Structure formats: C-alpha cells, structure tokens
Image 1 (cartoon, rainbow, N blue to C red):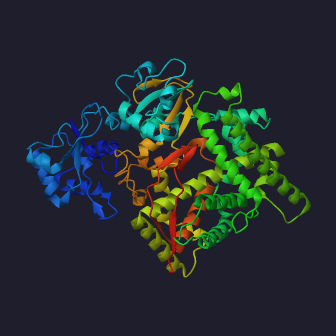
Image 2 (image 1 turned 60 degrees about the vertical axis):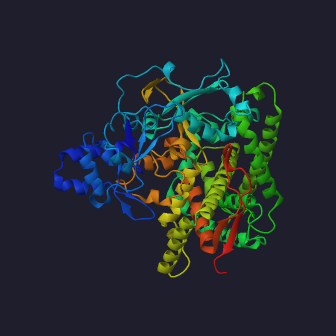
Image 3 (image 1 turned 30 degrees about the vertical axis):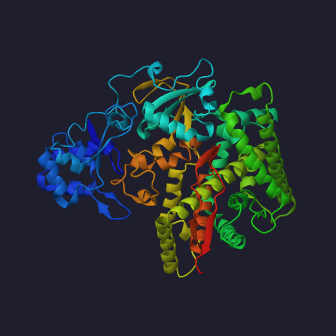
Length: 601
C-alpha cells in the first residue's frame, strides 16, 4: 500500500480535511485546497499534496485533473510505500511515475500502515485491542543487565550517541518500544500524540528519572537532593519558591538591560580575540564565560567579571570543573551503579568536580549575603526572595544557586554554539536574520532595545530550529502515576516513559525536510503546521510542572546575544562538519571554528 509523505502537516489533519471535503460543493473544493497550502521558504506558498492521500476513492482522472489545476501537485511530491520491509526503508514513487503506470497513487492511502507513520497512532484514537505490556516490542537483552553489553561492543550502540540509538530503534520497532539497560527499563515513545497521553495524566508531583550519581553525591555530602533531583513534596516546595521569580516574563525582563550590556561586552570580546583567519580560538570557553556572567547577573545582580581580557581564576576553575562534571556524569548515568557500593575511578572524578563547583557556588552566595548585610545598596532580589518567602536556609539557597549556575551555563553555552554553527553553515537563513535586524534598527532609528529584540520573530525561530536539529536534551521523561494505554499497549503505573525528541524532530512525517535548517517552519500558521507538532519545540525544555526552571532566562540571553553577534559579524564555517555527541547534554564532537568577519569591513 502507499501513502503520501506529508511535507509539513501530520496525517492527523487528513481526517478533518476529509470530512470538510466530502461535505463541500465542487466550487468550494478549490478553496479547501488553498487552505491546506504549506510554506516553502524559497517559493512563497505551494498547495499541499498530502491532503489528497485521504481521498480513498479518487480516480486516476481526478488525480491528474487536480494535479494539473493550479499546480496542486508540486514536482517534489512523492508517494512512499509503507508495506513492511526488513530494512524498514521507504520506497519513493514520483507522481509522474504513478500516472505513467496508469495507477492512482492515492488509492488505499487510508489503510493504516504498520510503521511510525500510522494514522491510527498519530490520531491518538483508541485502538481496537490494547496489547499487554509483555508484548511491547524492543531489543532483546540478557536477564538482569538487559542490553547493557551491546553498548560495549565495537560495532554496537554507544551511550554518547543515545539520541541516534533511539531514532534507529523507533524506525525498527515503531512508535513505542521498551529497552532495559542495566537494571533500568524505559518505554520510548516516538509519536507526539501518544506522548501527550502521559502529559495529560501528570499529577501534582510529577516524577522523572533521578540523576542517581547527583543524588548519591548530595546525600553523602548532606546537601539535600536539590531542585533537579528531588521528588514529591520536597521538590514541590523548592519549585514553588523558585518558579515565581524565574518563570514570569515580567521578572526575567527586569534583567534584560543588564544581559544586553553583557552581550555588548561579549561582542567586543569576540572581536578582540579573533585570529588571522578571523576565527575565535576556544570559542566554547568564551561562550562559557558569557553564559556564566549572564546567569550570575540574575542570581547576584552583580557582574562576576567573566567577560573580559583577564577573567578571575575562579571563573577559569568553574568552567574547567563544569566541563569535567558533565563528561564524568554521562557514563555514570547508564552503567551499573557500582559506585554506590565502591567509589569507582569515574565517580571519583565526578565527585572531585562536584566538590569544586559547590565550593565556588557557596563562596559566591556567602559573599553576596555578607555584602547585603553590610551594604544597604548591595542587593539580590532573587536570593533575598528565597530566604524570605521560600522558607529556605542558606544551605538550600546555595544548592539552588549552584544548580542554576551549572545547568544554566552548560545548556546555554552548547545551544549558542549550535546556533552559531547552523547560521554559519546556512547563509540564506543568516542573511534573512540579518535583514530582520537591520529593518528593525531602521524602524527604531538606532540600536535596538532589549524589548525590541524580544519581538524579532526570525531570531526566535532560529533558536527553535537549532534546538530541533540539535536538541540540548535529546529526550524528556516521566514515571506514570497510573496505568495508561499508549500506542496500543498497556503501560503499567510506575513505568519510566520517555519521549524520543531527537527521533521526532528528525522524522519526515512531522517535519518537512527534517535535515534542512529551515527556521521559517516555526513561523507557520496552525493551518500550515499541526499545532501538536509545533508544540514539540517546548518539550526540549521539559513539560508541565517540571519544565526547565531557567527556560525564560536562557531564551532571553540567547536572543540578545545572537542578535548582537549577527548584527556585528558575518559568520562562516570552513572545516569538516561537526557531529553531536552526548556529554549529558548534546555537545559538538570537536572545537567549532567559526569565522567572525566584521560586516563593516
């Protein structure tokens, strides 16, 4: 059987369109086709093709007539086979080939395919039969350790490429599968509509997989679990206190001016450290310092002195230990937790880096607290708020501050690296972003204020598209509180259920030309891009009550810095392609050597 590969919309839209099509008169059909148009960044609007895959009884003559009328069938349209195959790959058939073969390419298009593009699964409808958990597909492993040994084979899957592993497994097993690695089993879901079932069932205290090495370390040091690893009421107490300051746009916007000043200083710094090839040596270190300075301004309402020619030894130590912390954490998350019985070599590395990070964080918090007591002009609304209204002692405040510094710096640094890299590799998108900035400056009559930068749609779309291609967190997960039906299988309460973000972000069923960098896709209307697919962007920040607490700050930092960098420099890249690897978050596999050419040259 065959179906049309949807260019941007999901197959879910087919059903609603089909109902309207059948009820409409002939004169209205042309209007309906127009409404289903999708945006092509190179050629304005083209009518969408996938809607006609829903027309079960369309004759070959009707297909040819519709295709000939107003270029309804673009030359890029293709029909793919979804019949089961060993390699699970799609077989392409052009529309012209189908016409030449005198067969209707749309016939049987509504027969539900078996693969991840299943209309039944995408629609989230109740399956005819709910299969038991024991029948859920997945890779076969050994008792007690599951598939762990496969990850140590030379040609086997790799922990630092887990995002690719999950994508490949979903292509093999379908929209849902289970895998046990070591003593831990996870259900991986690769359909946004199916994962929404878990999101809707989320309770007051949503639980996600704890980062056991961090929990073990914190408990051993009598620090408390902290905001990231705590569960239940302990988590809810800290989250409630912090979210009132960090998730309100009005609160975050108060620091936009300070962050804009830091971004200006950062642009000056980039200009001063360019080498003869106009590349910035150790760009990752420069981005680390900028991110640390930015988040430090929010936490302490003071400059830490990270962006400049002579950063402090504390700054250098923090950056070095933060990199070591995440590199050591990655293997500890997936291997058997032997470190809980005997401290392993890797755990000792992790422990040493964590000790240094908390030492620096404690020093910064204590220093600020002391200044606030002795100097009436020294203040930190955030720290003071936690002390006064969050019912937290100094140890808990320090814990939150360190989590903000470590998580915020690592996430923002790597996302910005990917943003600059994708812009350097895609001059069309970079030029479009630059033109948006220039036009906004002309309308403003000068430099843009933080408030004006916050309203630049293409700048925001660039960040969203970067996080789609290189999701800083390749998956998000929850433990379900109750039994659920997901993708036709019974998932018992207490299961660890994970959204395969990277797999969905790179799935042509959900995103038109997923390997292409197209920020325009995020500027589409609801008629042009399914709202559920569009909402996938938010999942990279988590969801519900446990959404990333620093999301608003991170986005503000990046929008400001990206705008100022692209306004000042033309970015280009002249080396081998960079590949993503996991060091807890998604990082480049090599130094990213971007050329920063001043636009006034």
